[in-house]
Amino acid sequence: MEKNRMVLNLAGQEFRITAGSVDEMRASEAEVNRRIRLMQERFPQQSTSRCTLLAMLEMADELRSLNAAHADVDKKIAELTRLRTGEEKTVTPPVKRPFERKKPVGV
Image: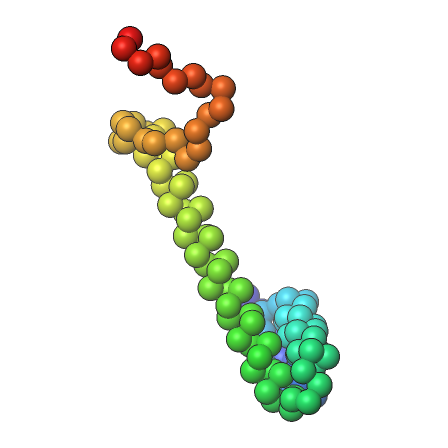
């Protein structure tokens, strides 16, 4: 992969970096600056550095939530793969099906 030298402007500060994709880094730069601006609007009395840290904290929390959701999806895929290959014989359905009737008592 080709490396590209570029300058990013984050919260008014320049950072010289080397990146694989200029377009992806520009998109990341725009997202980071957008988040910092949102924090500055929510907390106008706070400094830029504090708003930057708050934006980072918010992004880290979102990343943690997405990683947890991703792990759940991976777990379900592994379960379905085991079912397909016949490795797992009994699996409880994730939800009850409303159209299935309960068996009458005493039958």
